[in-house]
Amino acid sequence: MNIGPEPVTAILAMGIEALARLHHEANTVMAYGQRHRRLAQTQRKDSPMLRATCHCGKVEVQVPRRPRALTNCNCSICRRYGVLWAYYRDSEVKLAAPEGATDAYSWGPNTQKFIRCKSCGCVMQWRKHAVDKKSWTGVNARNFDPVQLGDVRIRLLDGAQTWKYIG
Ligand SMILES: [Zn+2]
Image (cartoon, rainbow, N blue to C red; front, side, top):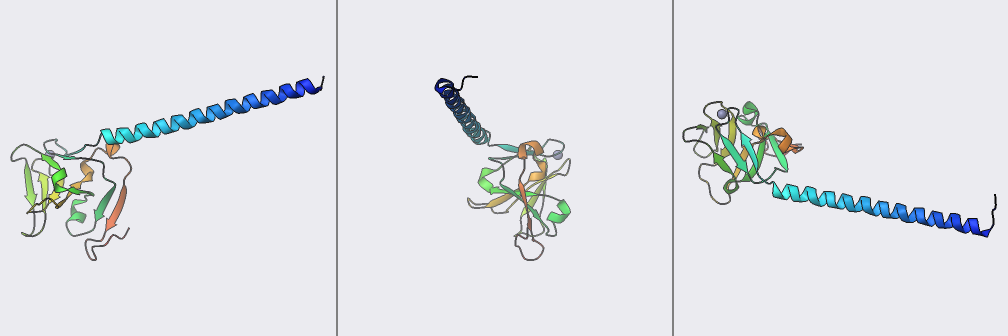
């Protein structure tokens, strides 16, 4: 084998070419990753609405976006219902149901009312009795399609005693 100055230069040149190719591939992969992330963000922005439906399908609650966290509360009513709450402004949420399809329960005039489907009994939402622009509402995330809901953090609210998040 001739190990003169020419082959060495050739080998070096090959090395540089290979490096350039690798660099180009790395850039392509990075560009793909950025494009992919941008696309994922766009899709999240473009498909904002999520529907919570009761079991029989008569009652639907529409929310403008996926919740960032859900609340599992241990108060006397939430633990019985076994619900997970997603919170929104009341004005952002739409309850879509035929007239007379829902029932509500509340144990006092100053507490929330819990709205459920009259036919299948699924708890859909709590609302305040007197709603204004700043009012919050809780939507039962158990009624969302789990695939559309995706992975969402669940926080534990000690509604039974301290009203603090404990997990
Ligand atoms: Zn129903």
